[in-house]
Length: 152
Ligand code: ADP
Image 1 (cartoon, rainbow, N blue to C red):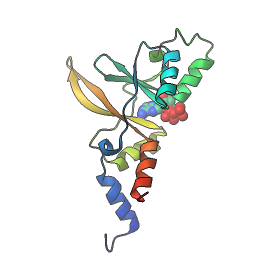
Image 2: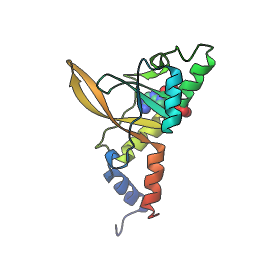
Image 3: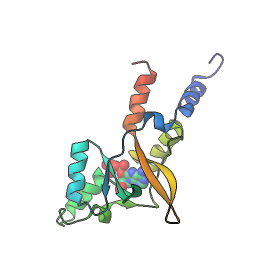
Image 4: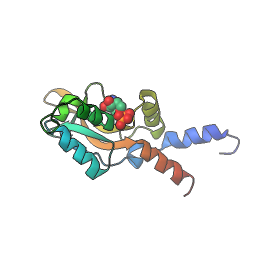
């Protein structure tokens, strides 16, 4: 890295590490799962965002902690309320891809002010373009990478 600015070194390193090298396992529920079950899953799996999928593991939506809080404050029975009613839905989901750089994925987190991105692979399913969920990219992945790049 002789003769290069520290900024260029960092951009070079982060631009060369792929999402698939740091991603976590996706935590998913089906669209007809209740808000109650989604909250239980968040606790058991220790995640802040869960991905909602249809049969075959295709991305339909995503629900964050705040979505769950909002749903819980609405006065409805969260045992009867499907998570599909309160989630953020496709096509309004910001995603990343296994071979995208962590720098680009991190930019998406900042730009869209979200904590987590589904890692997806585009596939054709019944004549439609779908996203198969293969991972989860979060601020924690970046923090872990940050510490490991410092050799800790
Ligand atoms: P929290 O709500 O726990 O603070 P976020 O900041 O990630 O978590 O979520 C804020 C809002 O943005 C929620 O309504 C959530 O559904 C939505 N959201 C979270 N992640 C994404 C994403 N990758 N794409 C689109 N919307 C998202």
